[in-house]
Amino acid sequence: MALIIPHRGDRVLRENIRKLETDLQSNFQSAAEEARNGLTNVKEEKLDEYIVTVFSQFENSTIRHIRHTRDNVRNEAPRRENYSTDEDFMRAQSDFRVFVSSVTLILFKLNKWFTELFEKISDFFKELWTSIKNHMQNIAENINEFVKKVSDMIADLYKSLFDDN
Image (cartoon, rainbow, N blue to C red; front, side):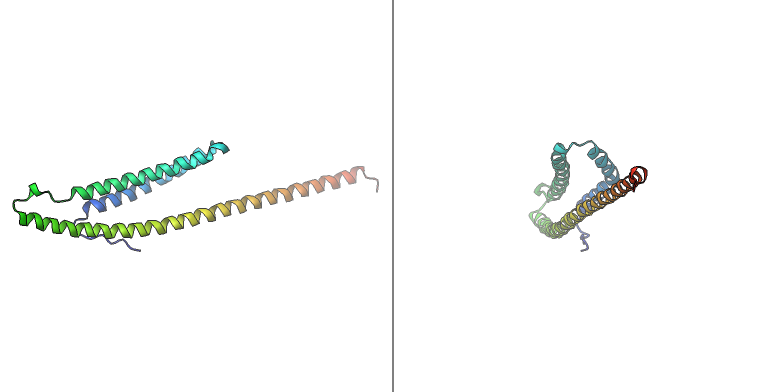
C-alpha cells in the first residue's frame, strides 16, 4: 500500500516520517550486531528479561516519535492572536480542519500498514525460529550419525584387533 502524503500542510509529518525511516536504517546494522553480542552473554534465566527490555525500548522509541509528531501537528493549529479578523481566523481554522482530516487519513493508513507489518514480522519470527530449530535438529542428527559411525569404526577396530573370530 502506497502512503500518499498531501502536499498542503504536511511538512512536519513528512519530516517525522523521514526521520523515523532514517533512524531505523542508520541504527539497524549496529543494533543487530550489538544484539548478537548482547545475547552471547545473556544467561538462560535472564533471557525473558532481555526480551522485555528490547521490546520496551522499541515501544518507547515508537511512542516518542508518535508524541513528537502529534505535538507538531497540534502546534500547526491557527492561533486567534495571529489573525486580524475573525473571518481570517475562521478561514485558517477551516484550512486546519482539512489538514487534520488529511493527517487522520494518513494515520489510519499508517495504522493499517503497521498492523500488516507486525503480522508479517510475527510470521517471520515464527518461521525463523522453526528454521533455527530444524537446523539445530539437523546438526544434532548429523552429530549423532557421525558419533555412531565413529563408534562403529572403533567397535570394528576393537573386533579386528582383539576378536579371535
